[in-house]
Image (cartoon, rainbow over all chains, first blue to last red):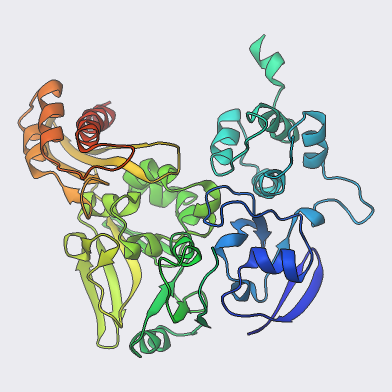
Length: 160
Length: 279
């Protein structure tokens, strides 16, 4: 099926087999391999991207379903000059990643939640992260990074 | 781990969608796809045609009246979760929705999709059974209203006809004097539930005069526990209620949760949900 959609501000027109997953089209057809594929059944969250601003599993969408949509992947989070988003900087500061496999999906989900102003507590952050599996960090650095980006006080100050 | 070849259709009217379903062959409707797409990826489902309802007008929206919260089938679970008026009118939805998958799956997962999918381990079907709600169903022969008791037939099987599409879900507003409780146990948040309880009690002058209790994940569909309801109205003490609730279900063994364990979960969840409602 002929479809047109935008990824990170660039418009693509492609003839795509109906059954192809958005995650595969992003990685294999468009070369945007920052979107990672883990479980391919919606559990691990690694492939999460923003579809019209809404965090969505790209392994649970056919590419033909996003015709006319605007997709934002991890490659589009930094500005064109390469300056990282405040959330990305916070991940670096707080060691919010180790192998980095889960990171692009978490960044997508957290980017939407930050824009909506929904992260008003650490409980809200941990609830958000239930949809993302990380096998390296134990989540502590990830939570601290997102809390920092959301303007919540650091864990050490909170304990005093 | 990739869908088998299929033809993707995107009709713009409900009539066109029903006609596609009526053509015979293996045709599946996709709403948010958060349950169906994993089945396609695993090739547990291999439909020849996938009918996407996203372009069909009139399937998104939430209407709150004194008697019901009516949710268009393609309304996302997240949109319902953000609708304060709907949650205040139907507090059981407020209690149950955080248990439905994860934030990101609720972003795309729809209210109509999870009802039509008829997974006995899903939360909203259990809520619909507890509240005696109904589904609005459209087919080539017209529109009909199907009660929750008649909608869920067995595992992943509803009573919808081959050419029929669920267009809206109606959650009754029970009104003043009703209080609610909800509980679920899963291995991890967002996993398939091992046991679900949705409960509503009508309290008058400090006494429970009516109770509704539904259990999920312990049968081939969400079920009402009528003996437990009668016991609550009769004022049976918590320990006896726990034992009675556990004995009122007969779930199958599963690898991580033998039948006896899931029975005991139902007992515990009924007592907790009642305490939550009475608090």
